Image 1 (cartoon, helix red, strand yellow):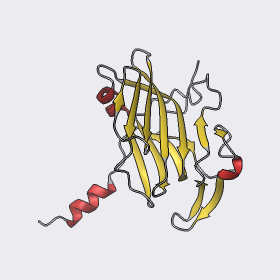
Image 2 (tube, rainbow, N blue to C red):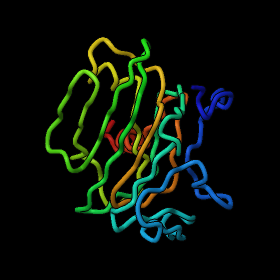
Image 3 (cartoon, rainbow, N blue to C red):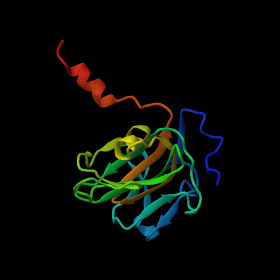
Image 4 (cartoon, one colour):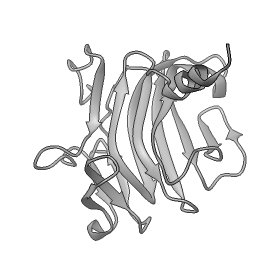
Length: 190
């Protein structure tokens, strides 16, 4: 099946979710009580964000579980603020270069990594909480790391669940600039 974003991947990024427009969630399936997902103004980012503080909401793209996104850009970026002490999960369905579909699940609920040939669970232990961050997942780098001999072809589906404030979700063609390293280098003695 053709991907939902065919023809729109030649630019520097592909936006999957933003907060602009009349219905930014139109391509997403929202599972759980709608009242637990609120769009509100956030003073810190000076813009609208989606807030799921009850943790009972799951966002999934594409809406149709049989469809695939077919996104080939190798970096997935989530602009999020994760709530302290609350669970958060990112589930990725990927295809490798030979067409094998694999599932990667990153969650704050996991205490250790578990890998099978088609499935991998990775703990989100060291992710900063209660601050806005660009959580970048380098898909082309982690697929061969967790699945020996495999190489990333496409991101076919994505789901997010748990307590989170969410501003944007997008893929990037090139690695994002690491501002944390830039500040560290600027503070380093000569």
